[in-house]
Image 1 (cartoon, rainbow, N blue to C red):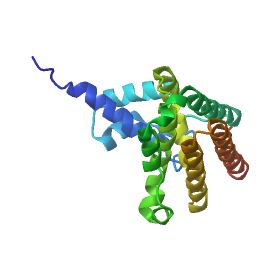
Image 2: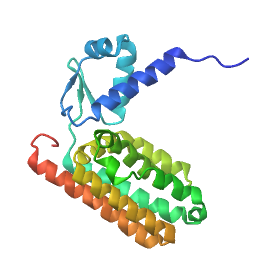
Image 3: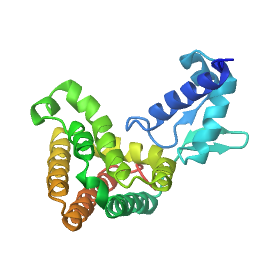
Length: 225
């Protein structure tokens, strides 16, 4: 017999994705109260899948659930933010080292190239809105170069937080243009097979992102603890 669709499970997954997407938006400040009734009404579901989604998001670090008070968007310590970004930088560098043999595969470069948009498109309203997704694809493809399931799982555990930082960093055209140019340089170097230089460029790319967040931390009180 063919397996039936589990509507209840699919609904829970969908509610989880909707709330997560809401939480990583930069216009939703830390400490925002996440009322179960309100979320359920706005999404158009009962409270049960909302409650389950918030529980999962608490495990991922995006939500804090306080007894008798409810759920809130997490406040993050700035030192923890920097630590997480440096972990990502280290894992991407490790991915290149582990995946040396796969650089002979043209599909590796094709996947990376597809996630690097044309600068002219970036200047459009659509480009500004959709670029964070392309940025995510580029960095996911760097991890996939390793061909390591363990490494992919490690990244997935931190992915929601990476997405939140990504939206914080990529809010203006100049920062996005810089990101695109840095991605191009990384791809060009990897196509030559120079893994060592590729790793150096990845480090520089993430250090640039860290500097951008440090600036936002100074200029936006309350963004981080």
